[in-house]
Length: 388
Image (cartoon, rainbow, N blue to C red; front, side, top):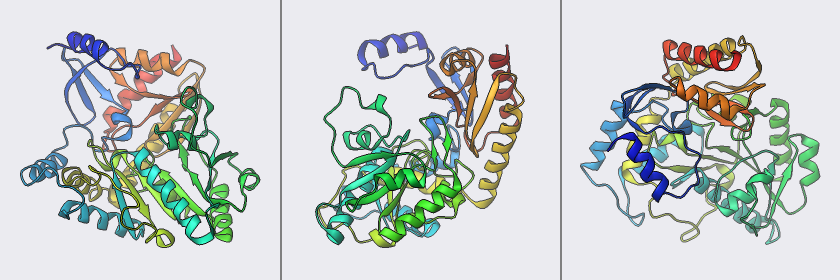
């Protein structure tokens, strides 16, 4: 089957929820993908921050296939070594006490919502269920995580939504206006990816941590997109010097297979009991084996290189005529221009560069191992498309 036939069958049989580019990929290596005609593309999207070591990564493949040769799945009524090992690694790297595994970022955030509400009820009573999120946030596609998302355009068609969420301006006063005696948690993304790579102010984030501590309100950090080395830190909250009560992550942790993790810190370590939550595929041994191979390579040297590459990208992109601003951290970058982001992305694909969009911005989320040569190619194509 060639690329054209794949596209035709996709349009005929798959629900039309994605505005796909007219390209079908056959294979690739690292940051380079090849379509069915053999055309090469430099990938600066990495499957939306998933393929942190690029495609066809040998160490990840070995970890996955070694586990496939043992057992591909067993239910969570039994123990598996990869799941226990991954949970230990996450706890040792973050200070978390317990981890719950799901299959996606939305599931990780659902778990965080349930943990926060149970904490609120068991400590203060059944009315303590309100969760504050920020305007322009994005927390997932399920009904509860859509309700938590502070963007009206995601709320069309799918109501009624679960109650108990309110949306604050990203300021201390904005959060205080939403807080009541029934607030159990505040959930934030330190960098709001889907709404335009908006970096939260450090003074606000640290002030929010202090405010939550004073009122025994849980602080949840959504690290689904920002986590696993993406910003040059293992998790983006670490750059702010804060300690959340719950951290959620997904995407890059799995390296290409679906996983979600909800990390529970001291206050919430024992919030769940038997039967409170569960997942058939959560913590699947094959996925966890792959995730272990990802996490063990996210060391200080690699994280430093991500910060350096991000600084280089920002410096070069800011020189392009027509670029109004460059936001983000590490290899999570947003580019604001005078042109529609979707048009820029479409033209880049024609020229062999894959980029993403986030509202009005072009978004770059390349593999953490992207080379200088590949970065320079991306900057050159963006320069041609934006400044022409």
